[in-house]
Image (cartoon, rainbow, N blue to C red):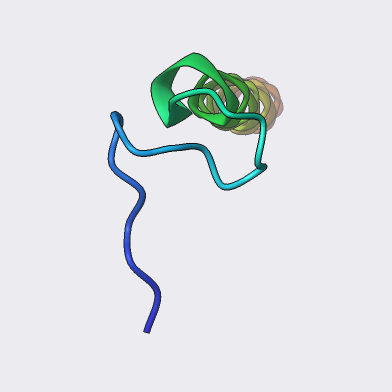
Length: 49
């Protein structure tokens, strides 16, 4: 079982920064980029129907 990292916890990458100022930003940006890619594919599929 893994514990969820909270915003104010130390980052797991050992940078010494808080998670919210380090990897949380990167993970959020990757998630948003993935959502945008999926939405783009859905628009392309809908246009060809």
